[in-house]
Length: 172
Image 1 (tube, rainbow, N blue to C red):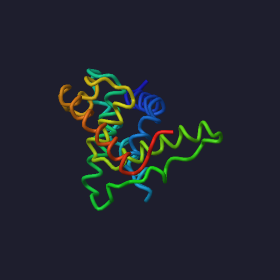
Image 2: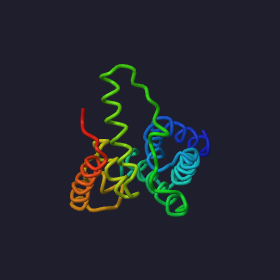
Image 3: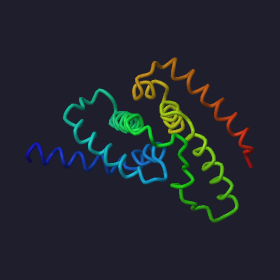
Image 4: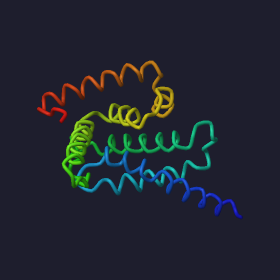
């Protein structure tokens, strides 16, 4: 098998395995004006270009998260004309069809709506924490020290709580 064919095979395997993770990051950084596809494509390009330099020092999922978040943050900085107040309501579909599911889904939707109002770094930190990444892994992905990750996540959770209270959202 040629080197190029092997690279293509590996690329297709990891992008297939981690497509939901990549999509989640794109949703958090894209607005309703159709930037999701642009971000997703840019992340795939960066993953392709970075595959040769990936040494395996970190888990593949950590590397992909880092690439996805850094791509989205860079894109956001380059395209600052886009509002930072994205509405995830416009990209999350309502799959709840029972009253129990509807209440849980509404809490989920509200949480991600509030997260979408955070700055790019805070958005990345809280998303990784919600994905149950350890502080060490979050630090590895974002380049922030483990102790600083803990402090920042605590502050972000407090901020989200205040935002939820100000918006009148109460858990069902």
